[in-house]
Image 1 (cartoon, rainbow over the protein chains, first blue to last red):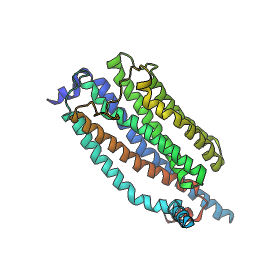
Image 2: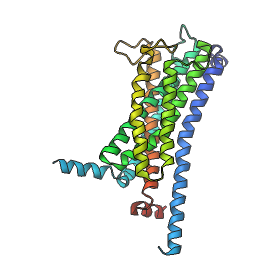
Image 3: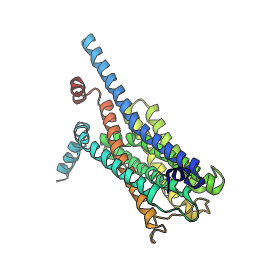
Image 4: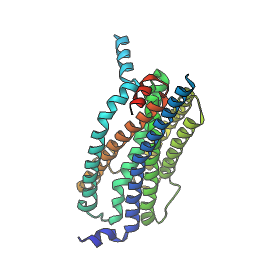
Length: 57
Length: 249
């Protein structure tokens, strides 16, 4: 089997590779989104700490 | 005796303790998910033989079926944790439930879309209102419902209770999804692996399928830990352990 045959997937290339591509996107989103969420949460807590120090509460 | 067990559970389910322990576990889950996933993909795409009925299109199975299994598995984890949170008021369980919902939703979405991309060349349609497909779509909406309730209610305790109840009631959908291919005449094919009889599948197809299922499970384990850590930080944002941790960052 050569590479062009492999990518051709017996004529089902569109369906097979779209499925695999979407899977990759979903996996990456699952990795990136909690990382961004963590940054946001930490920034928010840091802001709160700063504000509390300023107002002295 | 009972009291000491209870104290033990409370100690190990404290968000602070979880936050410290989970940091050590995540790399193990992530690396093993990657290794097993890459090997499973290699076997599935290069080694597994061509299907005699469906040609190469069947290779979608190696992501479609594990994604569908995960959507059910994560739902059960979510509902059981939500139940534990409601009954025993263990905060960590509520956090696990809330952390699981978006991951489960993403797998349900993936199962539906890859199924649709498989259905088009095999059945001639991207979508049919078949019992299996419809019940899986309802599962996706249950995840959305849980997430909507979580974010709509400001008080965390009430949010956990309301969304947890929805998750528990929605468990009724799980056996419906599983048995839909037997109870109704569905266009969707019947079970090939999860049945008491021998799986009706070539061993070279079955092994990559099971490897991918294991890889997806390990991936979920890593991501749910990361998300639960976020939940712990956010929900305990006014507690001392989080404050001390943040000031060190």
